[in-house]
Image 1 (cartoon, rainbow, N blue to C red):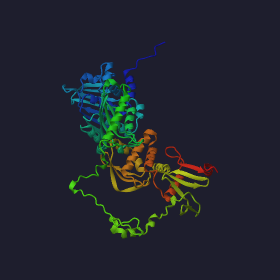
Image 2 (tube, helix red, strand yellow):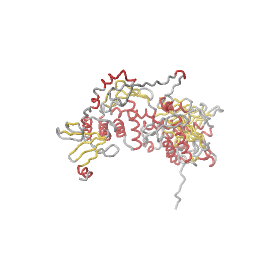
Image 3 (cartoon, rainbow, N blue to C red):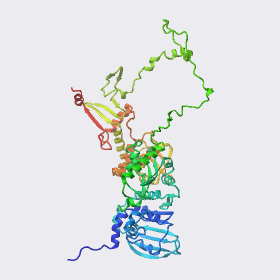
Image 4 (cartoon, rainbow, N blue to C red):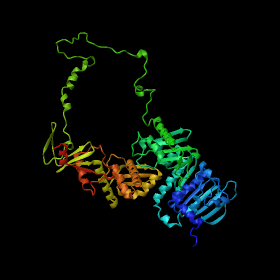
Length: 617
């Protein structure tokens, strides 16, 4: 019997490894940028076409490579970062495995131009599917330029699994932002389809954050800084009032490497616990410097997971540092036992000679046992007694009770019956409803009464209405008197472009207006007037992203659900009898009136038998 175990060819092995290292165009971009950073570059240019499927080009002014290195960089496990196993615990570079370039070359057409500063000529290498097509000298600038064309051209199944261009562009922007945040001392530019999306000059971390997310973020940032024998922590956190309902602006970097760590994220959220609601997520960009020998980054192919020797101490340091920053900048309440500031604004300095002692006025002829009934005169009211008598003549009118609206009258009554509560008589007109704690609506039925959650009911009504608008693409719009200009960060701007057709179907009148800017000229007619156009759009995007990540809903359901939840009647809002009647009529016209968007009941019914049992009758 012949042997059945065979050694895989390098091309096949590289394609298998590419499945772990290069999952989408954003993965390839991340590896190429990290290699450019490791080369010592301080200027990196990125060109992308067709969401990275046709071209990803990274140009840097780093150290460059020799002709031999230019060829060797495409071999598996070929790296300049480590020499022996012990080096894994002293890693300061971004890459170290030597798998990325070999994996990319196995599933794409790659062109490499590189030259060292001391060389007169550079090297050009062209490789397709792990096969060297050509290698020759070339005249080029010092540094390295690498182009990845037609990603997954020889693995069509992988290419078919890629999402649409807007989705892939968002992933590309996410990876770019993480690398750009970690390296504010490097100049970056990013062009997508010949349009410059990012132009990030060198600067401080605060400047890099505002360049990436917008100038409005400058006022949201609170610095964090802590130095201990275990770690050095620095960065910024966002003020609680600017927290969002979805994740996406939380960044942890360990030795300048972006990581995803739920344990450390919990430390930050724990520090915000007293000043932030449980369903909100603050912005933070935090950098941890730690001895590489105390961590292990060789855990996952994407290198976004790290193991720590003393993670409990790191947790405690992060939590206390963030909490102290919140208190230091008067964001969370603190107590200062050395100074009482409550009276500081009430005391004004005055010269001693200007101080006049108070005068005491009294009536020496006053006899408390006198039988005469005279109006007692108080010195400072002596001149206003007549006026006081006039004002208090009709004092009883102040306590007259104004007849309330019909919605506060009681439960449902039939015909023109009357019910007496206290000394007030209420006359029923049609169907009588009662609002309980401005949160529930009580309506009488033959068998008892119904208790309706007003917010859940309105969410259900709006959700089904918005779904109908998305299907028919005929949502009614309410024109804005003054169009609003909205500037978004790059990721949200691309998301709006992706959803623009469906957003317009809901009733929005919105169009692009320059880089990362939209103009809102109209909003859906079903939305109340108490919310600004900017808040509506921001809440819509936040809710959509939350639904996509948590519930895995399709695009239209996510949009309708997000808009319904953010524009519905809220608990605590007072409703008139007409509004309550209309709400109930529209609720029972829905396809699923009994179920809220979260799957909980909207209506609870209580029978007379249940009430009688309560009173033991």
